[in-house]
Length: 454
Image 1: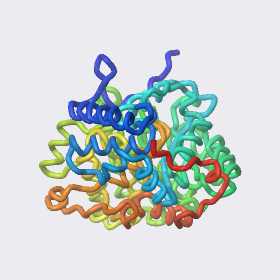
Image 2: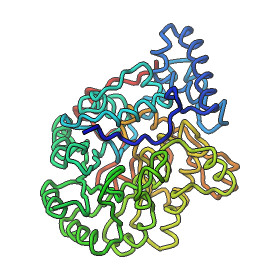
Image 3: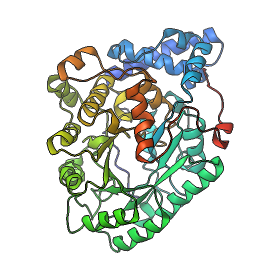
Image 4: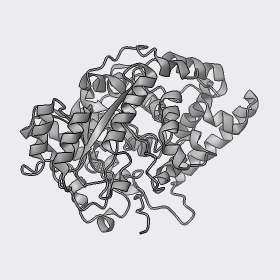
């Protein structure tokens, strides 16, 4: 039987390239900067791009093309010590990434590696690397998420499939990885989902088995899987889903995380049940189950790829972002406060490809949910180490004209109230952790290298 291909979020051109003219302009400016500054510093261009000075140069290039969306001092790109000082000042910031992934040893499908190939355009640290299944397994996960980024705590997630071999990790593997990493660290560095699959044969029995594993929260895919499932379901299906919610509450595990949106290119033809991925079933479920907390992953953004020209133009005209805008209206329109939005992939695919649109996503979510109910997630290791995403959020600001036009508030400083809340404080409150600066002085911290300025 042929391998099931993981659906890529966008259509690639004949040469495997998807970059817009703006992205090509950014890359050209960055390479020019890297050539000049790496020579001045006395290192290779590749080493420069892999370090903090190279990352600062990337934000300078982005600002030159898209306008001043990122706060960056040119001295960070020109002087490795300045870059290192900034990194050192922020490295103890509490960051909880509530969506991370790796695949188990039994997983042999290579389609998911396409996401790392796409991320070469956004993450300079991936340039020159060869992506293999080893890139998305346990050992590299530890290196990229903990050793090479400022991530403090990570939540390990998985995805189901209609076939057992298609799961990234089965629930016992996910929970086992949590125990292994926490034992390695000597502290609570890892949280873990258990995946539940309404409608699949024997799924309630599997839910009981998962309860015995004591996950930190649940993960469900209303589409049934990332795509192509025979078992889509609705959050507000009283006969199918509500018995599971009863079991979750009784078990004292009341956080229900739901994959929404993130549809691949051509989804109307490729995924017959694509409407199950929308946010239309969220409000009733949240209202009917105030004892549960529903976390909508990917903020339900409809497209899994960088924003299209049409979506960007529509946003500039009326502030509308497909499915994100609908989701963000639910708290006020339905009077629910047990709903969170999560940023995995939605931030990764827009922060560099169209940072102005990305700032609009953040503005829409903070306006609709409040800064207290937006959670940081990166979908690492699909896109490499999350450090580039952390830096992008720390530096991003919503332009003044978008704030005036759509009523957005500022995002503020890298260590200001809004970004602290999103990057970690909200998740800490939800998962009952402490979010103090520099709290995690454990064995993971000991193996971590110092700031790499490049």
